[in-house]
Image (cartoon, rainbow, N blue to C red; front, side):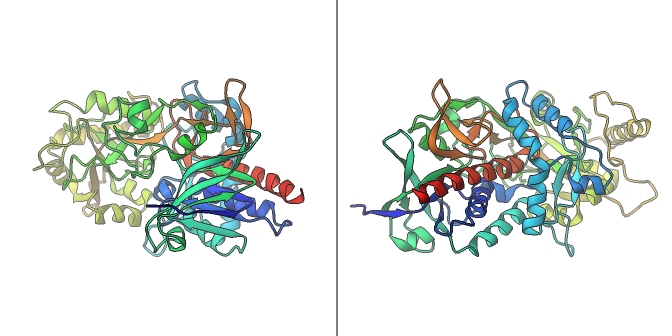
Length: 513
């Protein structure tokens, strides 16, 4: 088929419609409010914006925020930076980490103030020294997923802006190079889908958009599998199930490297310890994430015998390593009773009634409705459901609660125990909630190398590629060897806004000239 090449102009083009891209677009519009001639076009290959950001469930970090202060939580930028660097195992850029944590409180409060988001629930997740991960409470008995709520609020805001245009169903295929080696626009292909913005304009047509500045915010490559970028850079984990959709294929990495961008940490891939295993599809290659907040609320991890084997609030890489070591043998690997096969390593995630209440009944009910979480009454029913010995279960949960009452660290080094793991013997209606979870590819720490101003860097000299910016999972260097829970949404807001401000300045100068 002959493709029509049409030329258009937008002063700023954002590629990718997750939280990083939406934040960049919103900030670019704000930064150019006095330049009414500046337009922003967002190119998104899916039918709607959101990406993986829309599925985020644990929350967004910030320290110290006014929400923390109102709840009597003591925290600091220094403590947050230290937790992030420790999690990165010495590979994180201290400059990027400094930018992230210093802008974190402002990022959370921007979402609260500019978009009326009620990020009022603050939890302490794995690897954190204080509660600083903000999410939304249940409302009228219904869950308010934090990622979906943020994406929806920003999308509504952008839809109301006359200088903004969303091209959904448009896959960016190349960056247009200028004479100085910088970027001068984007080539994209409209998908054959008349129900999308781009598809309605021209069926399967190739188009170019000239631009003063381009922001890459296309996400990572954790959904690319064995035959894609994941198999090339991290073949040892490419066979694991993933929490990502196939859209997470590394598009932005390819676009950037074609213009000479440097890559960093491409072999650093985060395997999340808790992807839900469905009883109806135990070998599925795509899984639904069991939010870290489930453990932050007091959920415990047990092997098939009913024994704990790790600090549930350790960093993701360490919890994953413990599951692979202690929950992979035939007698220790958890599975749904009556099912054949399943992942090579799996554990039970168990919440007491107190932990379930802390997490939120509506959010937990959503998982139940999906067939991912189950409830039982009493330890005997829990033992029968999981195939564990009831006496071992009781000893395990009693030991957890005994250490909790002493205030000292347990045998796994855990010191924070938000609620009891054992239901009260006098509460005959209290229930336990359980699920089977398995390590799953979740996030790619590597990508385009950027500086603290979100400028994409080129070559050994690490000079900025003129007019090319990037934010979110498409970039590398911030998280090192392991991303700290709650830093993904934060990274998208902090560096997305930074990219938007920089793009706005470039476009404003271009408009003058």
